[in-house]
Length: 124
Image 1 (tube, helix red, strand yellow):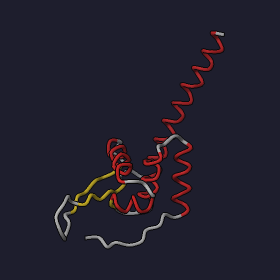
Image 2 (cartoon, rainbow, N blue to C red):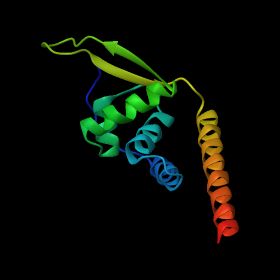
Image 3 (spheres, rainbow, N blue to C red):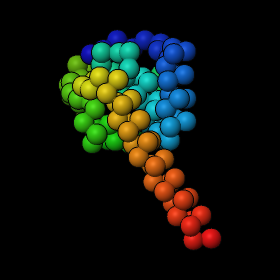
Image 4 (cartoon, rainbow, N blue to C red):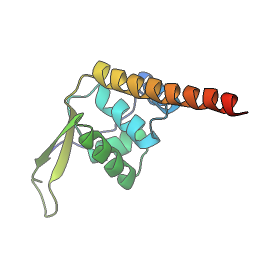
């Protein structure tokens, strides 16, 4: 089993999460991506401790990242006691590619909004 340790998010990770939030990435997803960005593999509990997210928020973020095929999920059996296996998360897509994907989505949304504004101008 993994050692319990005090985990602290780096200033760079907080800044990354804040910038992602400005790009309309949900807070749980932004915080989870920041936690995963500089670590080989993390548990949901570690993400909770690092980010201050609650367990349900971590689950929602991990579901989104999994559906986007940006992470790999591995289960590890507990060495003590009973209960569910521990889930370990790892980015499988380079952060640069994830940022590019977010950028493409943002540009597409901006273009659509601009076209709607132009259409409104034409209708008025």
